[in-house]
Length: 193
Image (cartoon, rainbow, N blue to C red; front, side, top):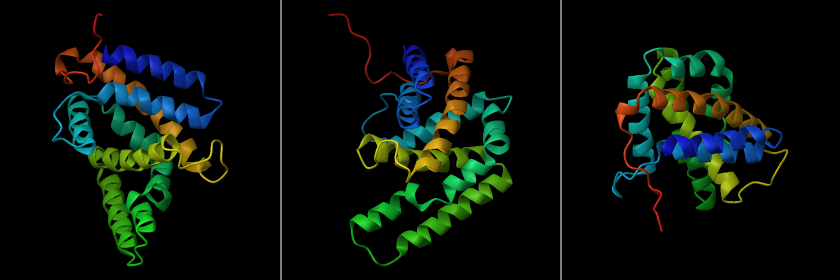
């Protein structure tokens, strides 16, 4: 069911490729359908995602995710990592009128960790940072924090779409190739009336 749902949203995303905002949202739904599981309320979405990526990377003997991130998307990933507008502490500081510039120190530290992970080839860390940034972009779009087809955020939306269009199919392939891996119970099972 998880894969069926994810593929349906992936197909919808591909059909909306002309509208990058819609494509990004549909891709995020496809990704969410693949990884979201009922693991208990104590686990945060970030923890759940970290566990999911760890499972996928353990199954990815051919290092397909690594190759995508480090060979195909190195430039867009560096751009995302260096973009304060997809860094949640920047927005939190702005909302809270925090003039301390702590967000800037966190941003520098996050960039340093991410760039070191790129240099060292740490796929798990890079995936975590990239999806943290994409999650902020997702929130901006889904919660109405951006204007549809705006000129302001085109670069990160374009890069996000391209990354997700490449990563989501690989995620689904890995899941299909390893049905024994067990990705947990889906959040909303199909129930008969």
